[in-house]
Length: 419
Image (cartoon, rainbow, N blue to C red):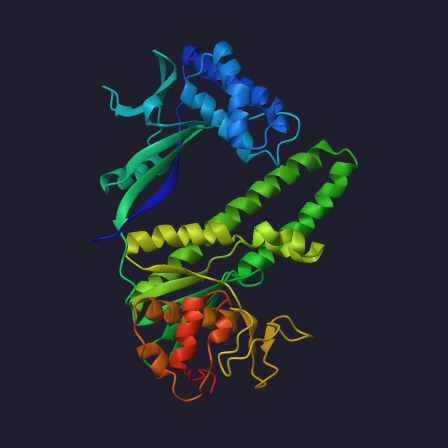
């Protein structure tokens, strides 16, 4: 049986200027959607869940709005998704539409267009600009991608497309371990599971942290001017935030592509930690939270998922438990860094000193290989670790009984790649 996985992409395409009548219809559509958003927002304090918010608002809004039920539901989802960030009211919005409420077609004059249904039996057409963005969009359609939803923006349309890919088997000899961090976006280790050795170690995205720190200093200066009442500083701050977002997104995509190309070159699988660190950021101090906020982990992960699906590379998201603390030389579990230098990993048992990011990426690769071999009922990888006799129990949670028992019973051995 072949496993099938769905991959999503979003393509931004530009719209041509609308006629005055179409512009009027579009404006009324956005105005009504914005009204529904703010009407729903008023009931947000009384709702304990998205379902509660639905029951509190849906019927009253349906009686007073010309919007279809699906679009009213999308407004409620938007309010709930932004409940922690929105202040008193929504000032701008985008409108997400499913397949029932739009149709992509080409006019008799060969102009690509979207026909939008904004109310029952009421439609208007948005013409699309034929440019680089549209060419990229059509290339995906020709390659078998299908339009799933669209989101109407100010002068653009964000088109979500999807495609089903076969999930590749996890049988590669090599594993590319990826450690995502604040100083180096992606530290890479290519690990040979057959010979138990490190093939190559690389750093990707150090420029991202440098640029982010520089932009953070500029934003701090602009904020001080905004506090003094400068409108120009407020506009500059917004432009700088957009510039930072675009830079980080672009570099994340480029680095993900480089990692996948590296995996294809070595016929390797890719392993990355399955992190939920942002949900726990309140546990850290202010400085740590600031660093966490600069790590585009989810963005890099999503780019990796998309590229791996396209190139037929297996992506393994491993449990991050002790991946930054475990020593591959002796198997001890340490603090994860030297006391005086957070960039270095120091083992108190064997004295190993190595770059923290480099060590973590190696451990991620090793853990992925161990989990794979154990889940497939194989023991050859465990039995290969025959020289240094390194226990790997410290890599797994105490309540992970299946893996802990398997590792303990096999008495795995590991050769240090640092010798």
